[in-house]
Image (cartoon, rainbow, N blue to C red; front, side, top):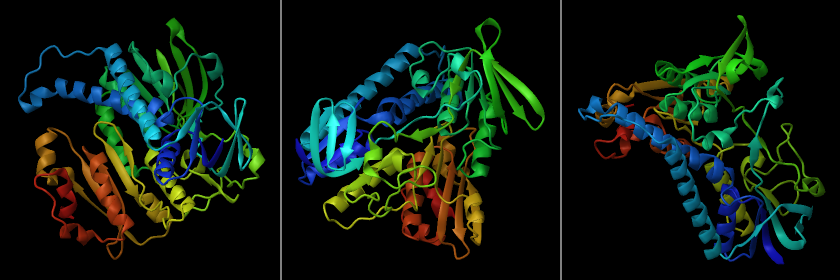
Length: 448
């Protein structure tokens, strides 16, 4: 039961670190109390995108006439959509299990408890380790709203397994998770209302881009209530849920068949024995780390993923894990948060990397914002009949790229191009030095 590295948490950070360390020749034990893949694979990134793709296909069939294709009697089977989602998840979980096996990682199912930095207890067994990595992830945050505890509401877990579409849905929270579920259920024909406490949806995304996406979904029938503080939730008439809120204009309420609470996530820092490590925490109660190596204030103890609080995104967690393992193995590798892309998988997609206009202004940059309609790309026009889009680049006064924001498909596949330019300190004119295949939507970058 002696290992060179013990990892707590089998999500993207944990399983990526385990695979990398195992392939590097280290003896590794990985503890996971639920299912390998963590929230991302089992009840987050992958299942939501699987459902959203079904919704995208459904929208495509409904709008086929725009492309001179006739599709009659378009319908869907929600139970089969959910069943397909579960099949995709099972397949990918099995893939991770195979990776762990090939890397020689010992996977232990159960809740790990830290006795000290070199001793982990799980069940009746005690495991010794030279290095320890914390990858415990995050959990859904449920706000303390009056009456919520007496209502049968959804979090993302229940929404993912919905096999009977509700007539209407109220969503508390207009962030990424809230908007992706709003998009999904809207495509299914559900009347959706999004209640957001700030002045715009998608906090952290460029406000102009967020506003344009909101306008697109308003056209599709989604109602948005912004700058609204939810004050109480109770049972309404005929089994409906009533959400009461307060805005600058006074009190209001929304009644819906179902309620989805999507108010963010909190790092999982309790129940693992972290108090036995004497770790230093930030003012935001995140574990304090050396951002170059991912080591905590305790020598030999590392933290990666949502628990660090830098970026609650799976791809960030994977990169943090790679950097941590590199440091353990004595390799030169530093973590950089300069160009972490973020994507909202709505239709159209939204993708961002680097600084927004608001961030640049707050940081005191002498910046410029330049933007082009996506119609500058012939491929975009050919494939997005009747759809608008925009590509927005933020630069310093000398044209160094510090941010990029895209509304329009396939933004999720394009944003890494801008991210690489930001990471390498490139200028706007450098886009023209690269030969893009024609026709592609990515050619939009050469137009700046």
